[in-house]
Amino acid sequence: MDWDASPPPDGGGGGVGGNKRRSSIERDPESVKKASPPSASVQDTYTDPDYTGIKVAYNQDDKGPFSVHISKLESVQRPGPSIRLLNFAQFLHKNSINGIVKGGIKNLGRNRISVDFLSADLANLFVHNPILSANNYEATIPQYQVTRIGVVRSVPIEWTLSDMVEGLEYPYNCGKVIKARRLNRKRITDGKPEWLPTTTVALTFLGQNLPERVFCFHASLPVSPYQLPTIQCFACCRFGHTKGQCRSTPRCYKCAQPHSGESCSVSDENVSCLFCRGSHKATDSSNCPEHERQKQIKLIMSKESIGYTEASSRVPNLPRLSYAAASQASPRPDPSSLATHQSQSSSIEASPHVTHQSQSSPTIPSTSYRKTVFRTPHPSTPLRPSYDVYAHSSITKSPKSTMPNGCAFPNPEMIDPTPYLTPNDNLIEILVCALVNMISKFGDALPNNALRLLEGLISTLVNKNNGSYDHSMEL
Image (cartoon, rainbow, N blue to C red; front, side, top):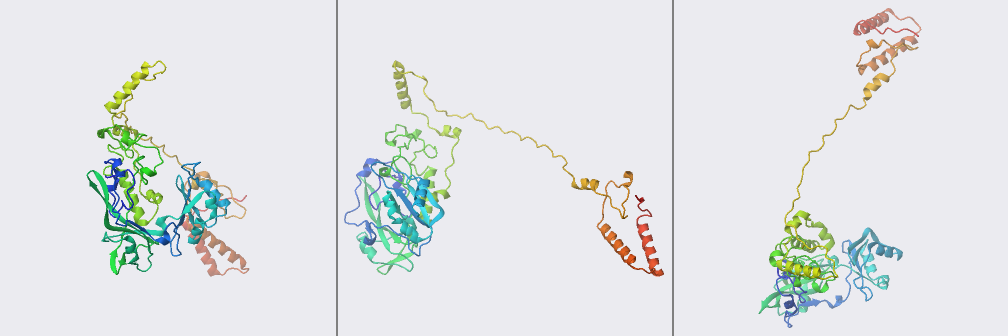
């Protein structure tokens, strides 16, 4: 990949189809500083005078979330400021800042916090709140929330961008263009890169709608979404900023150690990636999976107009290597570096004021002897019979009796070991009781035909019980 050690001139980098040429590291970083800018006769950037130096704001037609980003201004006494989430949340509460969404205060980095409001008006008022500037805070509305970037082609190079923007007409429900930037391409001439203007122009539309086409002097120009480029720092190898903006500790893109990659003596055969521990440089976009992940993040940011934190949470991180895998993938030490280390070790031994703790040079293991042992699981103990509710109730229940003054317990040997009650037992008892109550209410003697029916009923019941009945004695 063709990586820039310093940011390209205004208008350089970025495009619809990715940024493969911009992300390489194989060239001399000093040559980037000598790169000639685009032709002075070609206007490469245009900004609407009404929006120059003015913070953008939400419109009434915009959709939420209505986010505001806050950062701490850098001062001479405290370079590299930072904001703590809970401290800033307490600051908002003490100053009676209302209209904040529950859970809407989120941390976006070391010096950036996002606050979501319930409406666009509340967010716009908070941006210009004087309490922020009094406490050295700066509040801005993120550009991706209120603007959309599109790309148009076939714009003549001899045209100025101001004339082009003035001749644009927009479809319904589309904001005006507040910024135009002509994209440039890089060409190497005599070993020196130079930027040449192209006919592709990136337009920044005000509002949350990106039109399918615009009209320039009544001619139709199709608008395609702009894909954000993948930017990597030449100093710390992280993404999202350049070497001129870096404040982190340098990390080598060859051996992943805390020193500058330009001064590293590791050969190309022994390089190790900082992100995936592969045998390639940390700036190699064609082989490193982290570069592909960063491209996917930028693609989501471009399509859905969201921030880096939210887009990064949707793309899974690279799997962490185990110690054995990392040991196998680690490069072997360079012989020249080993010789230097041995010479330094011998000089330390010769010095009487230095105590040498180890005479052997450190070696990096190249083979892992770890072994995975699989053990059979311990068999579970079989469950014992649990408490039987039905057996307990059959033992402890009171015996049934049809006698008004009770009865004696029957012979245990004659009790059915498995008593079973049919659903008709209670029904028969209820019918017999009802019949007895009805007969007892009559004072006259029963007629003969009724007596014969009762005798037939009694004989039927006795026959159903096999001629036996309960032998009970009165107490």
